[in-house]
Image 1 (spheres, one colour):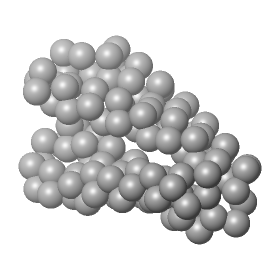
Image 2 (cartoon, helix red, strand yellow):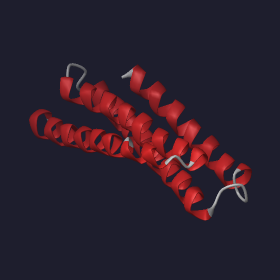
Image 3 (tube, rainbow, N blue to C red):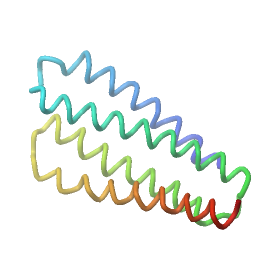
Image 4 (cartoon, rainbow, N blue to C red):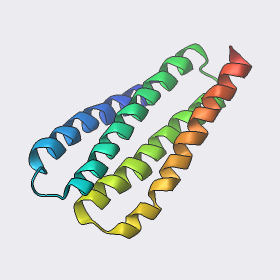
Length: 123
């Protein structure tokens, strides 16, 4: 529980900081297409930081749930792969990095499915 609260808070903090950096530090330095990619990374990082808080709260009630633990780790991995690859893509414009992004998306999807399964089994 504590781990996912900390990871959620760190990622929420980073999403706010990176969002501000994108809006103020990168404006005029990147093409609009790449600023949009940066913004998408910020949004998904924040959405899934919130997901980490949800997992932490659920683990507080169901601490022995492997489904919830796996969900939290997959959300964290998804943030790194999805948002991380988009941040790097936006700044470097190396398009091959876009091949990593779907792996993060799959991590997000599996994490949310695990939460659904945990809800059906535990609640």
